[in-house]
Length: 332
Image (cartoon, rainbow, N blue to C red; front, side, top):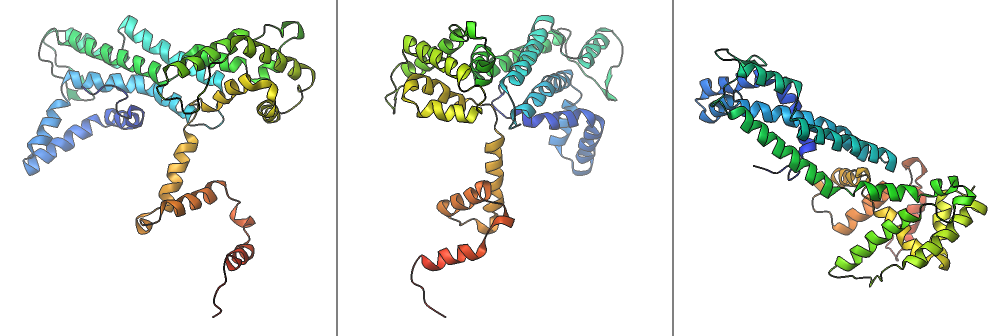
């Protein structure tokens, strides 16, 4: 069995959902292919569509992936925030836990189980007759479904940072520091900054090869620098834009340890929208007719396309003048 998330299950959700919508038509098309071309493979696939096990797995993945699919849209949004991610992941985790605890997969699945337990009755799913081989098959299939749910839950936990870290990063954002009361500044978000520091120190300890020779962060220095930052924000930087505060933080020699912690904010895998746009732009530039374009040339064209000015602001005359002055050229 293929483990969940070894393949792009989220991308397969629309396909699975469409298969369930067109279940009778797909079965009819496979039977037609078999009768017209004597295609045994089509016959096998058509017969599998009648099996309760296959129907159960389709319903399971449609139920779970509908939730994951909605969350994937959030991660593709460039303007997402940590609170939205936390809420969405909590909803998904509670949904998976509910399946594991109650063994309730979906309404359609449970109705099929009820009908199958009735003896001497022909059961249909989407006008397709359901076949089941043995009496204990229902429980076996439920166990398989629960095993898959458990694997999905574990894979999600591996792929995404734990909620505590997300909450800690959210707590130390400048917007939240600006809201802190003066009498709370000494201790405000200290536990959050320490938790992030510990995680970064653990990375350094388990990093086989540390190319930057990064030293472990010191707790006392981090707390001291964080306290200074909080008072600066409260007294002098409260009305400044976050980008300006970041710039001052990274340039100041007073926040050597703290700048490392805030730098890690930019490494959080919040959205893949920018990366996907890059691949899309690459495919638009390096087409089948331009497949010999060099990596350097492709890099330059992608940089211009992604970051360059709009075409209406482009000055062709200036570009020609720069090209003409790059070296001495022959006159025609």
